[in-house]
Length: 191
Ligand code: GDP
Ligand code: MG
Image (cartoon, rainbow, N blue to C red):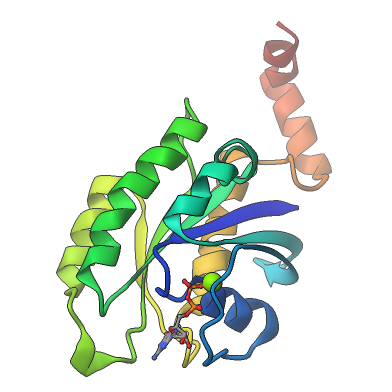
């Protein structure tokens, strides 16, 4: 199972992205979330993967997440709205919190600019989003939870990152097992 945490300011479309991915529908009404869990099975690179997705509420409520969700998460989706510049800048602090909760090592992460369908309301350029993702050292996607644009790619890309970082821990691969043995990696683990 892959545990994914979705973070970002209120109203940027976190719940809408998850609903579109997990249930293929768009929720037009705005229901402020406190915390919610979604399970979805997806086929990624020919493998059946179970995703456990944690939807979060507003920044203030993260505090309760810090010990629980943030440290349990294997991958993080950082969402802002392309129509709201402040939601982008707020992610700087959000990312810091993630890194504090997950010290040491790389943390699989993707930066998402949502609501790309609202072309005339756009406040954040693609270059700006790309620039921040370069600083964050993660990938960047522009999505529309309403139209479904690139929504699957967000979650699939993140699962691929997690797979790369922790190869072999999610399923049993006899070929990899024998390769590792040949390299003596078993010994390293024991030492
Ligand atoms: P959250 O607080 O981050 O979970 O935000 P929601 O998912 O509840 O979305 C907030 C509002 O933005 C809702 O009214 C959604 O219908 C709307 N919304 C979310 N994603 C999109 C999108 O991609 N395009 C448009 N046009 N509206 C969106
Ligand atoms: Mg929500």
